[in-house]
Image 1 (tube, rainbow, N blue to C red):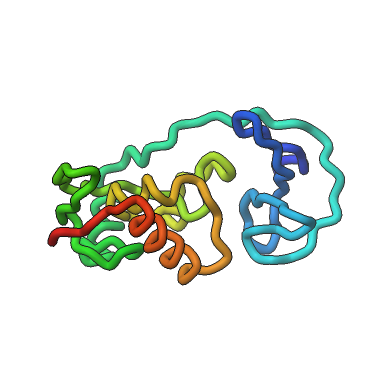
Image 2: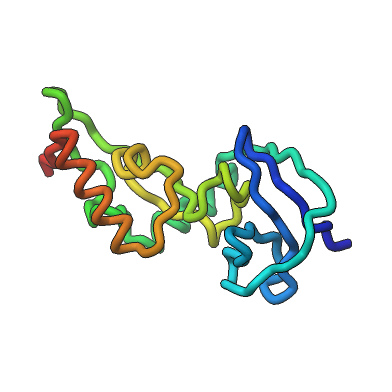
Length: 154
C-alpha cells in the first residue's frame, strides 16, 4: 500500500511528504520539487502525518560499516576521528557521531543511505541545516569554527 500525499509534522515544522514512484520511497517536497530525485510534484496533500521515531542507528554493524567506508575520517573537516580541539580554553576530544544527510527532523529517515559518520564538533556546528552543495557545507563549518575561536590541535 502506497501512503497518501500529506503534510508531515516534525515538531513545529510542516513539510509536504509524498511517495516517489521513481525512487520507491517517501520524499519531502519543497517548493514543488521532490527532494529525492528533483522531479516536480503537483499532488494535493490528503492527510496530515504526525512524525515520530527513533533517531539513533541501533544496528551496531551498520554504524561500523559507515565509519569503515569513510576510512575513520570526518568528511566535513577531513580529520581522523578522535582528534583534539581547543574551545574556550578547554581541550576536547572529538567523538564519532552519525549525522543525517537530510536532517532527521525533516525526513525521519534512518536508512544507511541518509547517514554519514562525522566528528562531534562538525555535527554540532551543522545542526539541522540543509545545504545545496557539500562545498557550501564545508565552507559554512570552517567559518563557524573560525567565528567560535575553535582551534584543531591534532
